[in-house]
Length: 399
Length: 139
Image 1 (cartoon, rainbow over the protein chains, first blue to last red):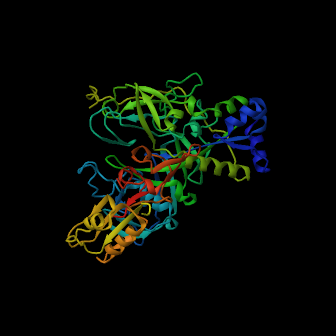
Image 2 (image 1 turned 60 degrees about the vertical axis):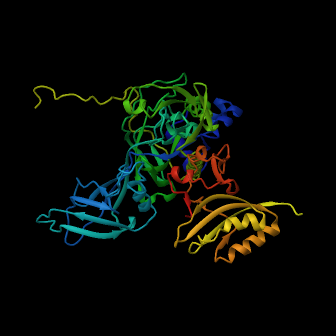
Image 3 (image 1 turned 45 degrees about the vertical axis):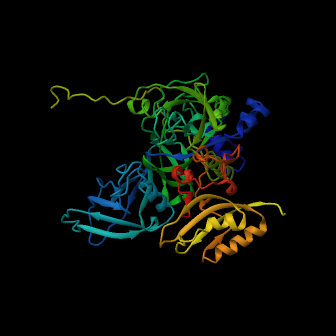
C-alpha cells in the first residue's frame, strides 16, 4: 500500500516509476501483481475524441467606453452572454451564424464553436462582434474588434462532460444512409462506428472511481487541468461485467483547464456531416498505484471491455433501449465485428494513436517531477442511474 | 517490344481544350490503355483529368509530349486527393469507407493511419467522412 504523499515524494525526487495503461498489463504479467504494485507508482491513461459538452469561459476586459455585452459572436459563432459585462461562454457545438444546418441535407457544418476554440488555442486572430442595450455605466451599444487568446484576461475551458467511461457502437438498420454524431452509417448495417480509447481510456482503468474523483489533476490538452465535478449524465449505476467494467456509457468527468497552456494539436474542431460541429480533445489522467487492487484494475485489456451495439436509425432516436449485441474493443479494433451472423466493417472516431501519445507525454511529465498527483476532494457518485426526460402536462396547482 | 508500365498522372487544362478528343488519340495513336479516375471538364474553365495510362514507356513519353502541345500541364504525381498528415488525428474513421485500402491502419498497436497514394482511386469517400479536413480534393 502507498499513499498519495509517498507517491508525490517519489515524483518530486524524480524517482517515480510510471507506465502507460498500454504497457502495464504485460509488465504485471511479467513481474506479478504484488511486485509490480510495489514498484510502479503511477499508470497513465488517456483518450482523444470528439466531446460535445465542451466549451470555454472568456473574459475580454473593458473597452472605452465600456459595453455590457448582451449578444456576442466570435467569428460569427454565437456565444452566451448571460453573465457579467464582458464574460462569455463559447460552446463547442454552436453553429456559425447563417449556417444552413441540415436545410440542405446532409449539411456540411464546416465551421462552428469547436473550430473557433481550435483557432483560439492555436493563437489565431478572431473577430468579436457584440451588441448591447446600453446602460449608464456601460454606454457602448455596439463593438467590433479583433483579438487573440493572448489579449484575453482569462480563457478557461469548462467542459461539463468529457471522458465517457464506455460508449455505444452505432449501426444503421434502415435502408438509407444516416448521418450521426458517430459518423456516417451505411444502410443495412454497412458499417459500425465506435468511440473509445478502450484499454487506455481513463475511467475504464478505474471502473469504480476509486482514484479519479473531484479534484483529480488531469492533463487537459497539455494544460494542468482538473476534475471539477461529476460529468453530466454520469451514471455509476449501470450494467457491469464480472470485473466491474461498465457495459454501457456509465461515468463521465467535468473538466477544466487554462487554455493559454493548451497545445493546439490536442484541441481540434470537428465537422460531422449531417449532424453538426463538435470539439475533439486530448485528455490524460494519472492513476496512482495505491494498492495491488488499483493496479489490477489498470491491467484491463481491450478484449475484456464490451460495448453495446445500437441501431441509430430507430432504436437510438426513439429511445427503445434495444441493444443488438455486445462486442469487445479487441474485435472492434480488428477492423470488423460479427453481428447476428453478419461481418461488419468497424471504424473509430476516437484516436488510439493520439491517446497513446498523450499517455506517454503525461508519463514523461510525471517522471520529470513536473506533474504531481492529488487525492480527490470528493469521490464521484457510484450509485446514481441516468434519468430519462418525461414529457408531461403541468402538475395541477403549480401554475 | 518493351514491357508495359502503368503511370498515374494528372492533366491540368488552363482553359478546357474540350474540342480535342485527347483520350481518343492516346488510345489510337499511342496504344495506351486509359483508366480515368476523375475529371472536371467544363467549357471555358480550368479542367482536370486524373488517369492511369498503361503502355510502353516510350509510347507514354510520346503521348505526354502530344498532350503538352495542347497547353496542358502534366503532373506525374497524379494527386487529386490530398491527405494532410498534419491534420489527420489517426482516428481511423475513414478506413472502412476507403474501398481500396489506400487509407489504412499502418500499425496494429498504435493504430496509426497511413495513406498509400498508389492505391487511391479518387472516389473521395474520405473527403466526405473526415471530421478534421485531413482529406481534400485538389479540384
